[in-house]
Image (cartoon, rainbow, N blue to C red; front, side, top):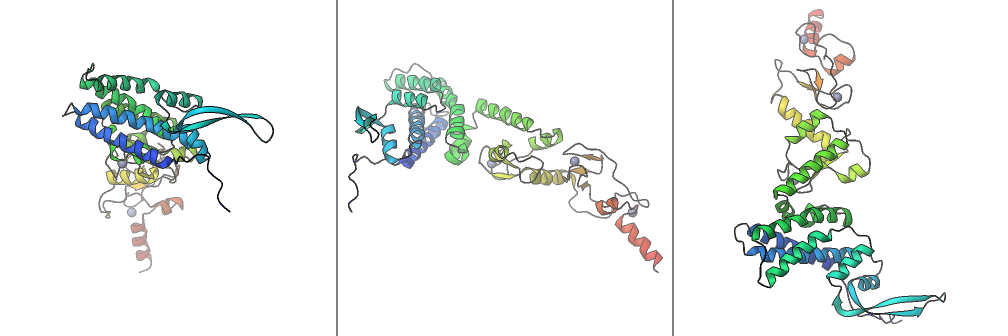
Length: 342
Ligand SMILES: [Zn+2]
Ligand SMILES: [Zn+2]
Ligand SMILES: [Zn+2]
C-alpha cells in the first residue's frame, strides 16, 4: 500500500535547530571573548548570540509538538487558518503553514507567552536594539555597553537551558559555558546561589568550609553545586549516593567521598607509623570518616567525644577495641599477650 499522501512537503529536523542554536551561541561567545581585545568583534558577538537565543526559543517551541506536523505548524508562519469539520461534527481551525517562512521574532515572543515557556524578553530586546543600531552603522553604544548587554543574557540562558531544556549548560555549551562563567557578575551570582542551595540542604558548617577550598578534579573550578537530580530525588546529603556537580564542566562525584578524601589529605600523615597513628576515624554519630582524634571532633556533624586512649601508651585505640570496651591499643595488647604466653 502506498503511504498516505503528505499534505505538507516541508521537513523539519528539530535536532538541527538545536545544533544551529548551539553553534551560533558558541560563535557569539568566542566573539564576545575576542571583543575584549578587538572591540570590532562585539558586533558579530551580539549578532550571533541574538540569533542563537532566538533559535533556542524556536527549538523549545518545536519540541513541545507530539508530531512532525504539529512541529511544522508551530515553527512555520501560518499562511491562513481554515475551518474544517472533524469526525464528531465539530468545527476545527487549522493553520496552513507557509512553505518557507518560519515564525519571526514577534511570533516567537507570542508563542513563548501563550505556551508558558520561561524567557526574559527585556534582555533580548535590549540586545536587539543595540545590535540594530550597530548594523545600520550608527552605533549608539560603546563596546563595553554591548558586552554588558550580552552578559545580561547569561542568567536567562542558564535558567532557560536548565528549566526548559532540562540540560546542564556545561553539557550543552561546552567550553563556551566556562567562558561565560568568567564574567565577574555572573560568576558571583552563581557563587551565592550555590551557597544558598547548600544552606537549604543544611550542609554542616565545617563541611561547608572544607567545600569552599575544594576544586573540581576535572576542570579546577570551585563552583561545586548540589547535583540537581539527587536533590530532586530527595537523596540525603549525608549518604555517599548524594553527588555534587561542577557547574563549569558538569562532572559529578559523591560529595561525602570527595570530602572524606580532602579531609584525609589535609589531616592524615602520608605514612601511618607507630608514632604517628591514624588521626582520622569514622564518627560514631554520623558514620562519616571525618572524626579527628586531635580535637575529638567530627568535622562533618560536629559531634564531640573523647576517643578512648590506650592505658599503656596513650595512643588512640582502634574503633574495634573501642566498640568492645578494651583499654589497650593493638600493639600493647599484643605485647601483653606475648608476655603472658612466654
Ligand atoms: Zn569541573
Ligand atoms: Zn559525625
Ligand atoms: Zn598502647
